[in-house]
Structure formats: structure tokens, C-alpha cells
Image (cartoon, rainbow over all chains, first blue to last red; front, side, top):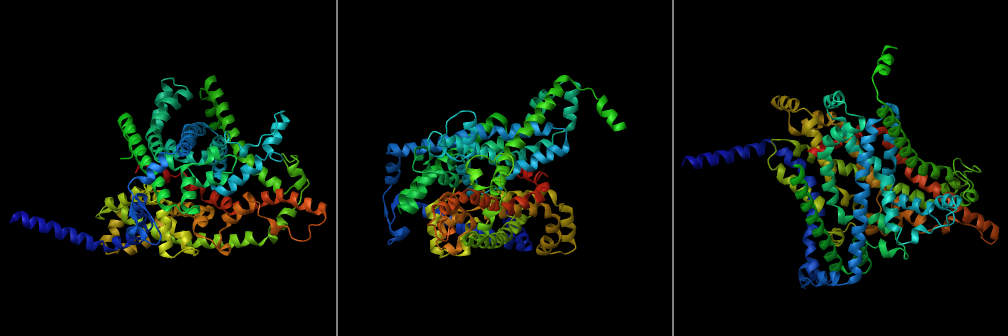
Length: 311
Length: 305
């Protein structure tokens, strides 16, 4: 009897708090509606990965075929190249592109000239705001075999003209280097603001103990920003397989396809240029699942090692 | 004077001085590496096309000319693209803020029941999505192809921006003020619009910038959902001109004289550089104005929260 009344009391209180804040529910409503339509409705459509989708039959009417499309994708040797290309691109981005903003932030933090620091910071953000289309255009202009500045410079040093954009072996490097150029400054913001909140007393103590600047960076600054580093690392591995479609697609040409065809560009081509809806969705789903597994794994590892993780 | 003395009297080891120089040198190097390509694009756009393709342009414009820009001015597709992109950017950013800010505020309130669950719904979409095709099918069913909705609907709420906004509302807008207003009988809507929003202006400026830049630079959505050239955004035109060399109608007039034709072909080089400048300028002008807010703990709070 009593338990019942406390329960109904609780319910009443709950209802009251909901009623009192009914406006807050209206606040989230538009965003939730958007989320439902644009993010969760497509997830319902993912089932066509296990079906043979026919436009005439609709999603529900199409026939179930189980894992046929997955077998088709994974059973083909050239498709395994796609996975390899994707991994190569994202792992290279991760290994080279991830530590550099951290190092840059640590060094910039040590520069005493405030004005100069500001200028370097502002300028280093600039490329981030350039669109992918413009970036790739700049690459093709700079790397042109006959007229590009890079080849002009190389000629000056006596190295022969290279046709960079059409070479498979160069594609990942061009991709990664231009990515670093575009995002080094931007990705360092987060570390710079983390460094700004490092306790000055720690530095004082270290200085009194006779630590040099470099030692203070390694033993004071870096440990202080480590939680941020860990979270950024997890977030980035969570996107390992979704490496940028836009840029890779724009950089593609028939000659470098051997290494520039990655999963996301293949998904696009299969789906929208060749209308193989089910097959394309299946590849995408495979990709998403691998991604989620990676995310959970890396998060687990980081948690075990350092006690800081996404969840 | 006193301050100077103090500074110089501070003991500084040789190691530290070497370190200073190395740090300065590295930063200068980064500055140079970032700036030079941008500078090179600018000087090429003002240079004589022959000098550009001949590799003579290095530090300053060679054979200063505005010919490239004059041609761009007369080239209609660029301006159709410009017009469309401005339209999509303004409408899209308004739509983004309308969705993101109230939602972020509600999710920041501790007395909002169900906020963790709703947050989870959002976070989940960061790592798992339906994929290109199912999304495409939904968009098709909604019948928004070739409308402004096709450009703004796929980018309604960016979860990262939502988290940034929520964290800011939570940590940087004092809850005491809100409580006091509540006791005075202020409704949630009034509180959000008149008390919280004015206090959150730095964050709103940053988020607005993120959304604007994203709208300005997008081309994939247009590639998927837009087939009417009159509705193409700037980036799609840029792709066609810069990467696919579709500048045929740019070269009007009789191309009979070989000399005139090569001249026009050569002009392409400086036109391309000019188009890069023209299309990137608005964004590159806006961001330094808002730059001071970037590092103000807005980002770091978001990641820690």
C-alpha cells in the first residue's frame, strides 16, 4: 500500500517536472525530428543489404538473400585491395597526421613572443577553411608535370619532372601531406587550449627541481594534455574506415585508381552510378561495423592503459 | 625599464636559449609552409599566364595583369554558383542554429528528464549511419531533390557542434542566474532567448562559423541531390571548371587564329588561380574575425565533457 503510494508519488513528481519543463521538450523536438528522418530512417533502409532490392518492389517487398552481397564483396580479390587501400590511407593519416598537431602545439606553447605566436596560430588555421575542391585543384595545379611549381623546383635541383597525380604509388602520400597542410593548425587548437590550462605551479616546481624546457614539456605538459590526446585518438580511430570520400574521389583518375579506389568511393560508384543499391549498402554496412568494432576496441585499450576514454 | 631588467636577470641556461631558437625556427617554418602555397596562388592569379606556366613566378607577380579576373567577372556560371551558395549558406546556417541551439540548451539542463537518452541517440549517429544509399532513398522519397532542402536537410545538426554548445551552456552560463530567473517566474523560452542566448554569444559565433564554412565548402551533397545546373552550388561549378577543365564557353569568340587560341589556353592557368582566390576569399576573410573565440576553452570543454 505504502510502496504503491510512493510509486505514484514518484510518478506524479516526474510528471510535474515534465510539465514544468514542457518547453524544453519542444526545444529538442525539431532536432529529434531531424535526427529521426535523416539519421534513423536510413538505418531502417539498411536491411536492403540482406535483400535483392528492386525499385518496383520497395524495401519490404524485396526478397531476402542473406549474406549474398557480403560474400560477393569479400570473395573478390580486387575488393580486398579496396580494403587495403582504405586502411593504408587512414593508417598513414593516423601515424603521421595525429602526432604532428600535438608536437606543433607543444612547441608553439613554448614560444615567448606573444604576437608571433598569435600570427602563427591564425595563419595555420587558414587552410582548414579551404574547400576540398579548391584544395585538390591546387594540388593538380602545383603538381602538374609541365607547369607545376613543384616540378619547376625539382628541375632546379636537377630532378626530372614527375607526373605525381597519375601515379598510384604517390597517391597516399599526396593525400596525407596535403591533409597535414590543411589541418595541422586546426587540429592543434584543442591541444593549445588544453595546454593553456596546465597549472603554472607544476612548471614552477619542475623549474626549481632543475628541469630543462624540454624536460618540462615531456614530464609536465604532455602528461597534462594526455587525456585530451587519448580522446582525440579514440575519435580518430573511430573514423579510420570512413576516410574522406570527397578528397579521394576528386583526386581519382584512371591512372592512379590502383591505390585511390577506396571503400567509400566504391560504395558511391556501385550505388549511384551502377544502381546496385543492395550491394553498395552491404559494403557500407560492412564498413560501419568494422568501424564500430575498431572504436570499441581502441576505447577499451585506452581505458585499460590510462583510465580515460569516451565511455 | 624595471621590467626589462627583471626579464634579463632571470637565469636562463644555454639549453633553454637553444630551445627558444629551435622553437622559433620550427614555428617560422610552419608559417612559411602554410603561407607560401596560398601566396603562390595569389601571385599567380595576378601574373602573366606565360610566366605562370613557364615557372617564372616565384615570389612576386610577374607581368602584373588583371586579365584573368576580368574574364572571371564575365563568366556567368561562377556567379550563378556564388548566388546559390550564398543562399544555401544563409538558409542552411539559420536552419542549423534553429535546430542546434534550443536542443543543446535543453540537453544542458540538469532538470531535463531524459537528456542522457536523447544525447545517446545523437552520439550514436556519429559512429553509425545508414550509409549513402539508404539516405539517398529517404531523400528521394521525401521529394526534395533539386530543392534547397536537399542541400540543407542532410546537414541539420552536427553532433560535434551540439556537444560544444551543450558544454558551453552547461559550464559557462551560470546556473544561479537561471535559477533566480526561474524563481521570478521566468518561462523557459523567455529564459533561453533573453538570458542564456546573450551570454552564449561567443559560442554561437563559433558554431555559426563552423556551419557556414561547411555549407560554403560542400560539394558531395550537390553531386548526389542536384541535377539542375541552375541550382548548383559554387563548389560543383568549381569542380567542373578546375578539375574537369570545362571552360569551353569561357573561351568565346572565333578561335581561328592559332595565336589567339593558345593565348586563351594559356590564360586558363591564371584564370584557375583567380577562381581559387575568388571562391575562397569570403571564408578566409570571416574566420580571423571570429578566431579569438576558438581557443577560449570552447573546444577543450567539449571534448572533456
